[in-house]
Length: 217
Ligand code: GLN
Image (cartoon, rainbow, N blue to C red; front, side):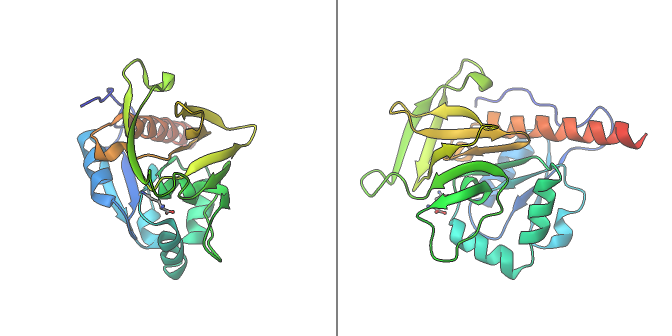
């Protein structure tokens, strides 16, 4: 297990409350990662589930299905509003697609929540390489490399000026980015027990909770 110690709560108050969009995809793996780090994981299926969250995870799965379900459940606009208001969000794979402002190879009518000023190409690694593993070095996570699992993964083909590239594959393709409180990876750290990305999310969540507490006092 390659976890960095994470602040799991603000200096006062209960454990951080982290939502996982649970319309489709690998919800359980994220739940396990967040609970291992001491946070409270909350499955988000309805608008009411968004209340009181300190951060949100958008899991991997099928982005077009999650998009359709989020609209059917009336979640799209509240989610967009929450992202615009600064909610820390971590998207893996399909979750990265959902955070992108712009898509390539989307299905007809496919929408995203947006927020990250990137263009993402869906299913960028073709048939022969639908799934693979790679070892990545991310200075932001420290010395220890990341064992990254890619499953019909997207690729970031454009990053706007405010976007920080966190990881590239050996061939130069961008696969992890951050912009403000939004973090996204084309791969799945949650399937290999890698906890440092979730720990980063919890750090943003703790900071935001602290700022809001100070503002309210
Ligand atoms: N190819 C999927 C999509 O377009 C993403 C795959 C994944 O999340 N593992 O949504």
